[in-house]
Length: 68
Image (cartoon, rainbow, N blue to C red; front, top):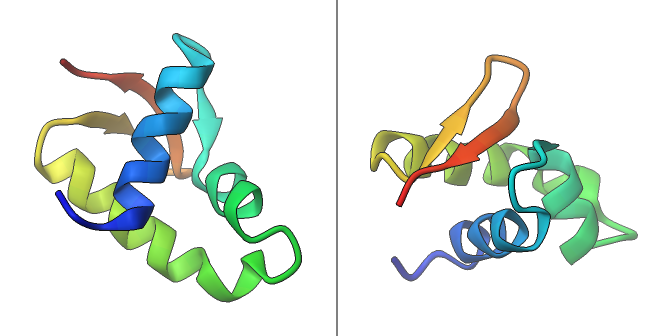
């Protein structure tokens, strides 16, 4: 896994523990002023992690659970 956005999602998972959060929170954390330019990218990264079985992702782009 070399995608910085995937790494950021997993890092926020580690920080939040069992608390769910949105993909937009991750991108706002990384790019506070320009985050809206990266929403498509963070959604693609989250979808990739879901396909790899690393996270649970809702239809509203909420990350609910990290799978070990």
